[in-house]
Length: 257
Image (cartoon, rainbow, N blue to C red; front, side, top):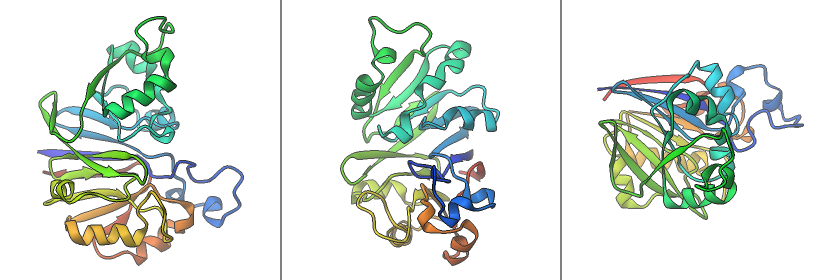
């Protein structure tokens, strides 16, 4: 079973460059130092799944020539993962209701913030219809493809990552309970956040991410959700252990799972 992931965005909630910043990384000419908000697209068994729909969603779809997808999965409710909901309209007009997979907490948040889209009465004309499927920690199936959700802690709220075959995608993680870590064993590829060198209250820093990698032992790991404070892509990647890499926007990874 072949699994391909395109990492659409690898930046923090502000993206890189940060608006108005004169930090050297924000001024870098290396395209790998320019990072949109985190999102990915998984292609497996003829299906295409988007993970998260942030404020850069429209740009990411255009850059990667994505004109259709089969399902949208949400890791959690923060704006850098959900603020692109209005840009689902072109897909809705072509393919009908958008199949969305989310936790109850995410649905509750979207009901508040996007009432004009989520409500069943007085719905604003032209917005996308969302066909919502709820999950927590049990496996679920999308069009014949098994998805394993991995619940983690984002400091103050739960987040979910997803495993497809022997590839797992996690972001905005601070801690993972032992039972959920077991779901990450035997991976060919792990994609997980590593914000910066300094400790952070709700994200793994590089040291913590590397400790998790040593515990889980994936064959390859790619760090995402990267702050400009981590440093230049080229320099940081040279400092990482063998088989650990910095992801960058529009990176494609293919594995036979």
